[in-house]
Length: 115
Image 1 (tube, rainbow, N blue to C red):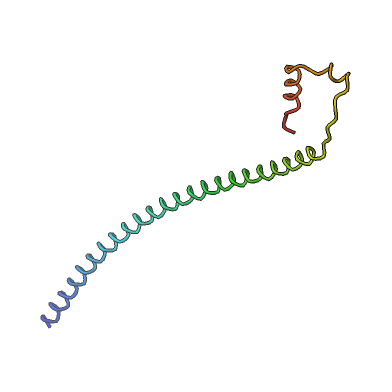
Image 2: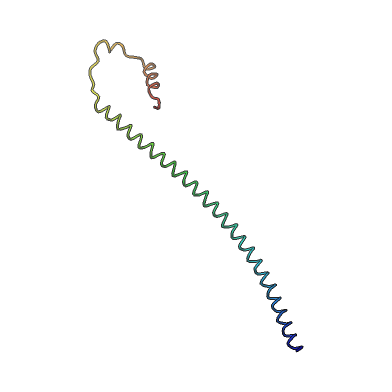
């Protein structure tokens, strides 16, 4: 009977030591999991920042393309106007009443405004 108690006691001690060892491993694994979660969070934040930057660049590129389409349309309108224009000789009255460069430039600046 004493031998049985000793064997049971040894088994209990062994199980206790094993439980302590496993508890230490569990704590170590929990620390590693926490570290990896922090690392994953940092990478997620970097990915979010990169995604936001990519979206901003995409928006800028689209705005540039939209402006280019608008300019092409405007160029087409101006080209059509110029192609349909007709020239004529100035009569004598027009030859003497031509504005000077200062006036002409002021008028051009006044006309050259965004719509």
